[in-house]
Amino acid sequence: MTESSDSSGTKTLNFNIGVLGHVDSGKTSLARALSSTASTAAFDKNPQSRERGITLDLGFSSFTVDLPDHLRDSGGQLPYDSLQFTLVDCPGHASLIRTIIGGAQIIDLMMLVVDVVKGVQTQTAECLLIGELTCPRMVVVLNKIDLLPPAKRQSAIEKMTKRMHKTLENTRFKDCPVIAVAAKPGGPEASDTEEPQGVPDLIELLKKQTYLPQRNPGGALLMAVDHCFSIRGQGTVMTGTILQGSLAINDTVEIPALKVTKKIKSVQMFRKPVNGAMQGDRVGVCVTQFDPKLLERGVVCTPGSLRTLFAAVISVRKIGYFKGSLSTRAKFHITVGHETVMGKVTFFGLPPSDTLSDTNPPPSGPPPCSLDTPFTFDREYFYQEEYATGQGDGASGSDPEQWALLEFERPVTCPSLCLVIGSKLDTDIHANACRLAFQGRLLHGFEDKGYAETALPQLRICKTKQKEGQVERVTDDYTVIGRSLFKKETNLQLFVGLRVTLSTGERGVIEGGFGQSGKFKIRIQEGLRPETKQLLSGTSKKKGKGGQKGGPATEEEPKSDSQPVSIHLHFKRYIFDPHKKMVQS
Image 1 (cartoon, one colour):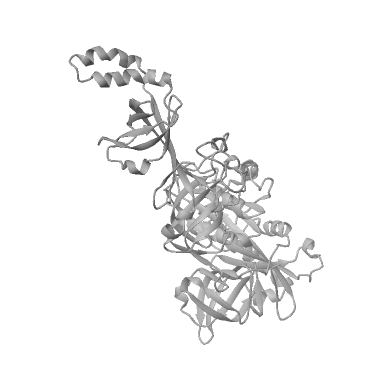
Image 2 (cartoon, helix red, strand yellow):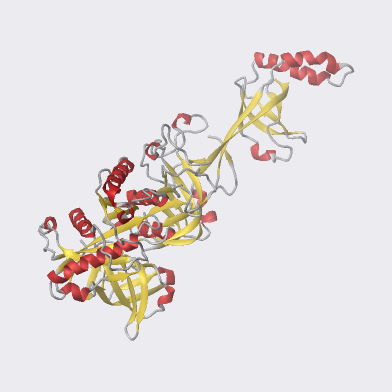
């Protein structure tokens, strides 16, 4: 539960609303209109709100309202006196993705702001996706209704409301409430005397949508810091939101980005001193002095609880609206924890169950599996050139289970099992295309800088290889000479002992090279069948007589009538095996 009890004994419930929307849909004006409307309304009823003021800091504004009736009976817990809404406004776009994913654990309700004239735009769709990944409830706010001609206003709002419901019908926000407002009539340049329209109704709607969020004070502390400044003689203050765990005065916390630990001297919530705070709370934490410029935004945690990773294995799902391809070796912007870095991906999946044959026996451990197979280093995986989509309409629900190895361009600090999103943020923001490409969970992190040598060889991702050559001639009943399977420069020693199959069914073993031109000798353990020898006789005879005068002319016919016999070699290689060994099961 996220709450604060100040010195006068009143208890406030904090409820976090993520404000998302396309650039210029009016998110910030809406946050401002909500805060000022709410605080003016609260002035008469609640003398404390005067002292409290409106806390508008970096992307966060909060306002307090009377506790709605449905929260008064809070299941036997101490009753709350008031409800504080904290609006998490997500500026910019790359930072929107970071903020929402980073703060996903504590966003209780999403408010999607849509320009009523323009409707759903690229970023609106992206916001929806992020919302689906992170948040249980949503309210859609159609903003800028003052731009609609008064005579047609109502019908335009109804039309857009219908359109929004249609857009949302296949998402988890089906049937969510849609409300129309004008947060800043006349636009940003207009004077502040213009009253916002529809905002009191929106506040009532938000109050109806509130619930008691599940909060957990347990586990390691993780706090997202969004502002940092020093107070002379006291120390450095970090303000932010506690994403998980709790903190108290005298605790020691770590600032991983600076590789330092600091002691907490004091904690404030709602501008009042408190002894501690927990998941979901907005707090100001004063610690022993450090240069605030070094940490404008970042995270603070229980010492040693975050890991710094050079690479990671994640479960992966393509985001249905992403139109680009997801190819191995491609680079994406990877948002993980509170950071976004460039990273290279390698996709891999389970062996296709129908090929569990001679070349691919069942891996030790559990059988080929249904969805939600736990990732483990004991299993063998198959390399994929790209993300594999399911049959049918390409809805990501039907895609086969798969994973990705992410290799980061610089190390990232993040909690374990956190949400990961891959996107193409360098795509033009105005191009009408979704830039979020895939999502997943971090399953295993590599903390060693030399992970490619020390850890990757244990990740058994194999590529299957198939080569085809021709039988050149028969030496005796148990030996044939083959060609066209290897290049001249190939080191044939690597292939000695590998099994091959002839197109006529016989199995053999490569015994070694023959001559200098990449030809090789195959030993057929069971001996050649008579019909195979018959097939090959033309080929051998031709070669035998090739040197005689007029030979080629008379030997053309048996050649057309002798069938070439092909040689098939199947093997696999583990892509991270430093010895590049060829394996046959």
